[in-house]
Image 1 (tube, helix red, strand yellow):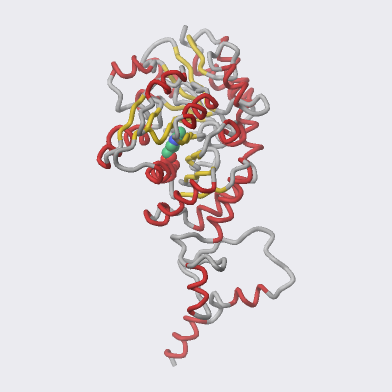
Image 2: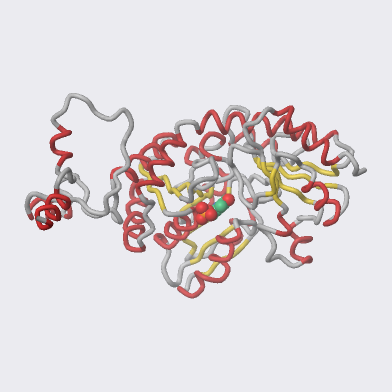
Length: 399
Ligand SMILES: *Cc1c(COP(=O)(O)O)cnc(C)c1O
């Protein structure tokens, strides 16, 4: 008896049901989660045809699956990119993409202020594979030109730097890279595709931590790369080899989140501009870092490269005082929680000197222009008035 149970339980209602569903007149309104590690074939020829590229289809979910394909397509679409891919994290997307286009003996030029993990990778890790990296200040594009060597293969930067909200001349960086036979990759995480589309200004590949604005609800870890088809083909080969694929559940969640990307980032950017303008008037604040402000040295570049008068949801401020004052402010911020990440629907605050930049010595912090009074805000989708009121209340005892 139990034998009958075991066989029926193993096969009844299994993936073969999909064939029945395909004959139905209705389809799911949204794509379901394909929670399967592998796909079944009627014969050996079909597997062969897919491996050979003669037929479309899925084989094994590390290679790709319907959910990763669908969300990569949305991302490529919104950027006007030829192709896209999604990864298990932002680090996976960035590291896999870089390693796909360089080999031992090659040279990379990078901006010095980068996401900590990427800086560590370029400064320490990639050396082990015989790749040299020069860090140079991108605020003057001539520095990039001066750093070019005959073996330079890649120029790398971020659209909006953390935490000082600097914006590089994307077009100039891409131009210098291309004139010298190198590629130009850019991490567009802080801007999101709603604020900036670096492909329009010459980027070959645009990279994301999808954990941030793309996911946007602080509930998934993922990454993405979009760009030129031939380069994405190289990247996708390494993605499969290194097993950096984004799983079906996260891919689905990311696709769901992307439906509201424009609504979220537009509101976050509008709120951030209002908060930044308020902060300029608060007596507790000595400096506001936000490219949307006329006072920002990056305002003109942002206007050239950013969409629809949006400057993103990230801003930083120098509070008068140091660690002690900052600690007090963070405690009194009410619904604004201290979160060492960013880009969720809720406004959050972080203290770069103790989180993202904690590896920096006091000297390095000074050199980078990161003060002990610097707080970084990730502005959410709440009412701007409420965000301003919460910040104003927390700052009121500092003069
Ligand atoms: C978070 C982040 C990354 C790394 O992404 P993970 O999803 O945490 O791996 C890379 N670049 C920037 C700008 C980030 O903010």
